[in-house]
Length: 127
Image 1 (cartoon, one colour):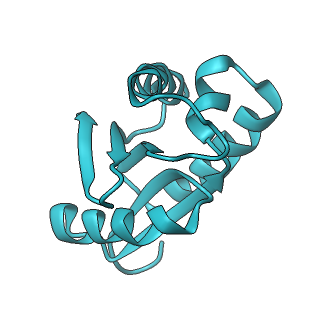
Image 2: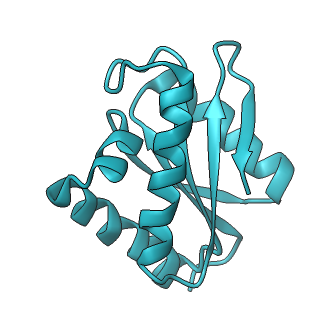
């Protein structure tokens, strides 16, 4: 297993949210590395049961957990998401459903939900 502490981010591909999420993990969780699994609006696919996309996300999470030793997985939504253009309240509901999907995979890791606000601050919405 590689040296250093890894965490896993299931995040939107939107480049505006990558850095704030990485900084959050490094500052709040002492992460050395963030394995980023990015898709346009991944919480939508996870919460709505898109089996094709969910399967590829699961495969990548498995690598992060099993090969890099990640013990923390976050599913992340954000303001002004082009891949999931819905209100924050709906995204928060999607995050809750997405967390349950990721937990059902049975990995030995904690699963949390994050939301990146329009000011690029990261908000913990479920821990």
